[in-house]
Every structure is written in structure tokens, then in C-alpha cells.
Amino acid sequence: MEVKINRKLCVIVVLGASVTCTAAITNKPEPVHYENLKVLPRDISSHDLQSIMADDFEDGLGVTCGFCHANAKDGHGLDFVSDAKPEKEITRQMMRMTIGINKKYFKLKHPGIGNQALVVSCITCHKGQPFPDAATGNN
Image: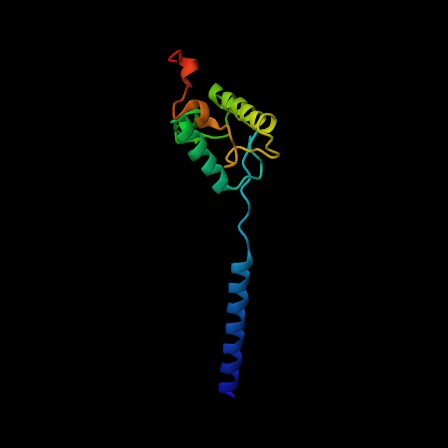
């Protein structure tokens, strides 16, 4: 009788563990929803957002996050939601301009910041500098 109980207990434990493991594997993590995105898609993935920030802004303008994002009020890190710095709104205007140029003049149907198909991107004018040469008078 003890062997039957142990065998049943063993089967129950194994089934329970396999159901738990299957549930853990099939559950997808909650998608990240960013606040205050006005040009980039609200449902952008963390990977795509990081790629745009690194490739388009850090490389294209030669800046770090603090160029557009204000310091957090508690003094620790940055407040990515805040619109306190005017550079953030200028960046939004530049993103809209870049999308518009690619759509109107290069006939891209769905141009988006971070899309490798863009003909005109941040680096086109900025060339790794925060301000294009014409803006600083260094033609």
C-alpha cells in the first residue's frame, strides 16, 4: 500500500511541476508602456526604444541622455517623462521633420525614426554633433 501511495504522490508531484513549468514558459512578460511619447509609438518595445536612443541620438548627435532628459527631482537619474528641457521638444520637432522629408521627398510609405530605410536621419545633418554646422555658423 505504501508503494502505491508513494507512486501516486510521485505522479502528482511530477504532473504539478510540469504544469507549473509549462505555465511559466508560456507566460509572456507584460509589455512596457512608456509615458509621454508624442512622436514614437506608445507601444514601442524596450529594444527598439534603446536602439533609437543609442543609434539615432547618441551616435547621430554625439549626446547622452541628459542632453534632452531632465534630472529627476530626487537627484537620482533622469526623469524621462518630464518635458522640462526645451531640447526634448526640439527633438520631437526634428523627428517630425525627418519623417516628413522621407515621406514627401523620398516617397517612403511608413517612415519611422529608427527605420534603416530612412534616407534622411539625424546624422544626415548633425554628423555626430549636437548642433549642425549651419546652426553654429561654422560652415
